[in-house]
Length: 339
Figure 1 (tube, rainbow, N blue to C red):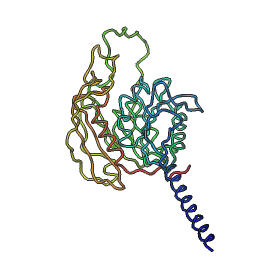
Figure 2 (cartoon, one colour):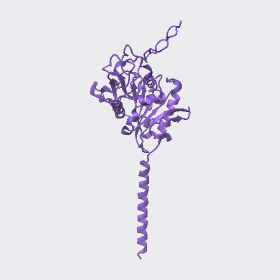
Figure 3 (cartoon, rainbow, N blue to C red):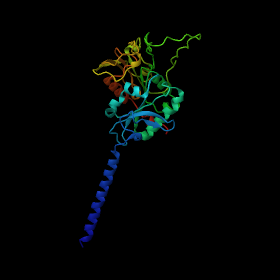
Figure 4 (cartoon, rainbow, N blue to C red):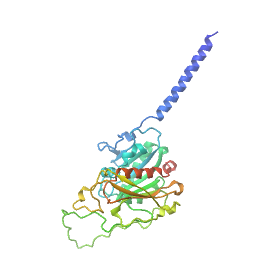
């Protein structure tokens, strides 16, 4: 008479244990650390990721403790003309803050060392692959970041059919300011070196300089400019994106102070160096100007690195502040875009 209740009790306990095991397995799966693209989390130079359709490589940095299903901010970081992905990765070393701010950073390269429309497919493929690996619902925001010609390329791409439905923000690293350009300093540009060969005489007139775009991209995204003080003659006190998003008047935040220098500089143009182009990396101070309370969570800001030029690597605390501004902005385009 007592056997049946005991059996039922054992079955109930086993059922409860099974439920607990299932919940534990589900929790364990949710907490599972993942390796993106089978790549090391450190963006190792010896372990570049290959984009299979073009067979070109890129760096991929992501949190070493990244968990399945975790939200991240995705950054596509483009080098400038004459540069490379290795230099760009260290010029804007967002990887130093990838754990603290949950960043996934892809840093591609152009074999001609200058971006052109022929590279667009490669860049689109990188974005598609990273989104698939992370999971579209886990991309809380997506930023284009570009130095110099990489910034002008980001500007060209940001509102195209592919990127316009995905990009939440554009960080211009000395790559042009939207909504009221900052005029270039008179001596801005790559300096001629003492050991350069003399220019060859030519009967042909010099090619005209590339003209800056006459209009800003016409889609919605946050915009941050970071620039060296010596690159520009002045910084505008107003911003068309700030007006577009109903931001309050510009305010100046507390200066950023760095006691450590950035990682890189242009070692090939230090004979002579110019303040406008950039000297050796040094500690320094940066001024931060923000247009607060923008509609729909947008961020519009300018960061001026005092006594710096075009090529000194971004200092640690400036990098951290730029990342903080980026992750504070509205996101969600990739989550809501058409697969």
